[in-house]
Amino acid sequence: MAPLLKPSFHIFHHHHTRWLVTGLLPLPQTLILLLPRLNHSVSSPIPTFRLHSTVSAAQTQHLDNAGTGSVSSLSSVQQPEYSYQQRIDVNPPKGTRDFPPEDMRLRNWLFNHFKEVSNLYGFEEVDFPILESEALYIRKGGEEIRDQLYCFEDRGKRRVALRPELTPSLARLVIQKGKSVPLPLKWFAVQQCWRYERPTKGRRREHYQWNMDIIGVPDVTAEAELITSIITFFKRVGITASDVGFKISSRKVLQEVLRRYSVPDHLFSRVCIIIDKLEKIPIDEMKKELRSCELSEEIVEELLQILSVKSLAKLEEKLGTVGALDDLKRLFSHVENCGYSEWIQFDASIGFVREGRMRAICGGGRYDQLLSTFGGDDIPACGFGFGDAVIMDLLKEKGLLPELSLNVKNIVCSLDADLQGEAGAIASILREKGQSVDLVLENKPLKWVFKRADRVNAERLILVGRAEWQKGMVAVKYLSSGIQNEVKVDELE
Image 1 (cartoon, rainbow, N blue to C red):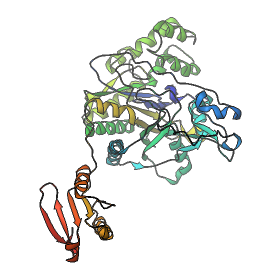
Image 2 (image 1 turned 180 degrees about the vertical axis):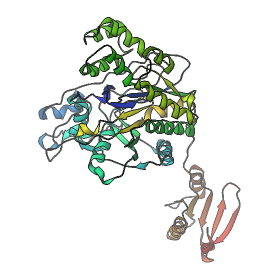
Image 3 (image 1 turned 90 degrees about the vertical axis):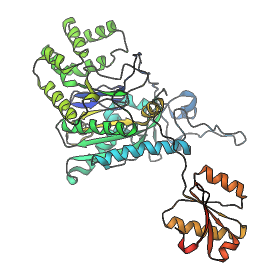
Image 4 (image 1 turned 60 degrees about the vertical axis):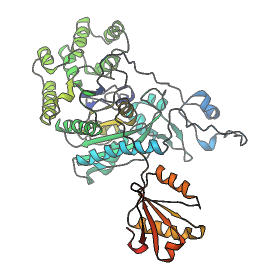
């Protein structure tokens, strides 16, 4: 069995095919990079992960100071004593975020676009537990992945972890459903993920991720559908082809080069690991590591030349007609037929984005042999993961984030403390008719009520006064025009 490769380092098995635009996805045969297009090129090395070994139960009480992401069973550890006299730290844990109302409105705006695009493409929404078996991620990423997990032993002595990505959960659910669901499956999710690593710009210990996956379609039409869905999202939020671009590559090309030089298949994964360091280490050091894989100087130079190719035409000049190129040509043709040729380009290099000030925005590709990793029958599959952090940074930088404020149609206020119940009844009538209402819950002066109405952008102010109420009426003031009328309660719309 071929070695399992860790998706967190973007090292991909040659049977997989994911294309990259952000960070936590296993990429195989086809690799697509989506990155901001900037007028200058700046080296952007990948931040190193903080890797720590799992601590013992006796050490667990010092987790925060030690900086480890693994914790032991709550029942077997002496819990720390907290002082109830001192003020608690009001900041969220390192690498996490609060979402006050103004930020929550922007988050909902972004997520609504994710979901609306998914619906436009006929995808169904799914969800998974945020807490999964630790074995699910170790099976996919190896023992080393534990150092990047928030993992612990629960009270039932089960090893569990907060999910660092969504794809393993998707694979588990597909295997669970088996033949009870007809193929192809077109599923999407927008969920929170956790990964214990050093927070940097565009990467936190928690983030939300939009995934779209197609299960059961072996053809590149599936990849084309996913790429065009991302472009549809970009166009909806105002991002253009001059702002971002897809870099598309293929691991099959690398395989073809190695086969031509009779490099054994068992060295493929090791070579991918080294090549993934491109531009993270000096070129001479990379050549040295490649030669340590029993590659001759000739093969090393050929590989580096192939990785520098930026067009399919030039690649074909070097390789001739091969199957690896046929798939790429068909993929480009499908995307171009949708009118999106300016969004995509070929790039034989692999790994993270190497230019610009931002991380890659999202990433995806094909993972036809992922299910067998978990003991299931392999099914053709491809998908992408799209994080919320980098895209929000890009939208902010481009001035594309909307001004979103609280909007309430009605504000209802009683002019007498004894009429608070009647004001509540008016609010209920309007709410049952589907109208939003901010009910003033205390006896406040009108000056305060008008300020409140302005803050919530209310369209109408409905005043419940004693004289009007005795006539079965309320005063309705339209705040934009200042017009005020008395309206019967049963005619209130």
